[in-house]
Length: 209
Image (cartoon, rainbow, N blue to C red; front, side, top):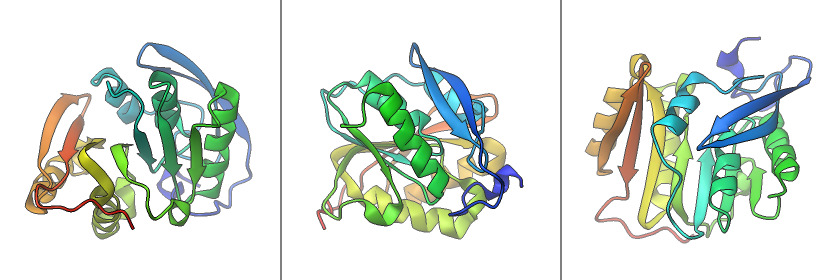
C-alpha cells in the first residue's frame, strides 16, 4: 500500500502504531502515527513547512478545524498552542480519526480536541480558522468539492491556512479559490511548497446549519 491511498476509509494494510516526535511552533509533540495513515512515523515536509512559515493563531480561544487530519499533528499543535481553543479534526480514514483522538488523550487535551468523520461535525459548527495539508491526490474535482463544503463554514473574520505542493497545483488552486470569491494570498514558499491563506467570501452569510 502506498501513501496515495491514505485517504481510504478503511485501509487494507495491517495496522501498527508508530511513535513520532513533531516539532511544531517551538514545541516537541510526542504523538502516535500508524500504518495506512498519511506520513506514518514522521512529520511530512509540507506540514513541517506549514509550521515553520507560520505562527500559532493569536486568538484567545476560538474554534478550529484540522481538515484532512491524518494522525492529528495540526490539531494537536492548535490545541497545544491555543490553550482555550476548541479544535475539531476530520478525516475519512478511520485509523486517522482513531489516532488523532489517541493523541488528544496523550497530550491531555481530549476535552478540547476531537476527531470525527466529516459527516459527524455538528451542522451548526462555525470555524474561526481552518488549517490543512489537504489531500491533493484525491483529485481536483473532489478537492474542490471538499473545499467548497468547508470554506463557507468560516466565521465572519475567519481564515483558512493551507500548505500545497507547487508541483501538485498550488498556484492553480490559489487562482481557483480567487475565482470562487475566496480571496487567497501566498504567505510563504519553501521547499517546493506554498502556504496559502484564504479568507471568507465578502458576500457570504455564515452557514449556521
